[in-house]
Image (cartoon, rainbow, N blue to C red):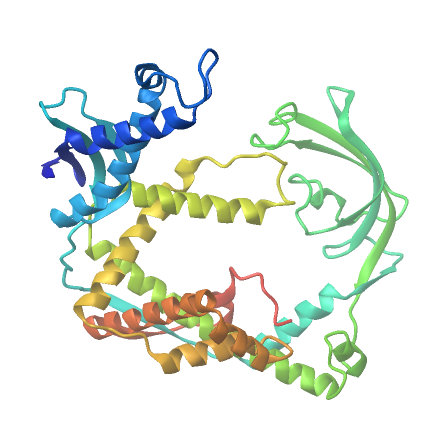
Length: 435
């Protein structure tokens, strides 16, 4: 087997593999003879079809089968011989003009980049924050609002009130499709209607009708309405204010606190908030470390790996959208391009750091991580056992722990400065609740 390699653009390689033609010719003949012994053809007894007829009819198909198998068996041997690390599946191109006595193919593929890590410079800001009594009370108020009831009031409407309304919308004096509704609940301040609608009802009382001259946003979801002036005639049929539940033992039972009551509820809320804060601080530091690694190591990455990562991101996004978007909607691949490239770069850089510094996954940290996951379940010991009996599940935790160990390594290379922060700022983009 003769192998030669040419470098293409970037990481592309064209590997030519030449083999003695007798390797394929002998196998083709062997298979054609097997066919001739079994084939049934009109005008001939079974097994008596002339070999030249069998060859004429089946040689092309058999050749392709044998050629494909030969490519599969020799490709790996050839890349190993040339010390290449392919990324992705190769594109195989048969050689049309074969040398006498040879057959061959060209495999076109990208190779993994050689990574020489660059020195890290910069500063990582370590957030310093704690859960305060005020943070805890704000969280409790959020939980109370989620379970508030509504009571009708005989006063003018204000923000955070819930109105019941009838409305009719017209454009140029004509009612438009979907512009009329009755007995619709509307929470003032929710921003669920177009700009100016809710604001225009502040101060309205039960039985009052108001006319609102508004305009649909230019980027409104309905193209027929986008950017157009609209007039809404709105009748307020009821004004209700929220009635917050008291934080007592009955309230605690709503969150599964059969014992301990309100005091136990407050303890658990604070404990969960502190755990969430610790995780957000850790994530903040990790993101900064990953930014430093990415910015410091501008490497070419195989397009094949980026495409694989786009496939993964697209699949995840599609799964999250189920039930929230029209069926059959397709997200454009290009919106994931930069994120996918970043993931590939960081994956390669992290792997190189692990190799260069002989970092081994810390089994104790893996155990701690698994136990942390298990605390959210009713029977944590069963969850822990599940992870340690499932190689794939445990490998996922090990990968996260290994990344954390790489973050520790980064922190040893750069300057780390404390930065005052607070629970609200560190969790403001997080929609999760402590229950």
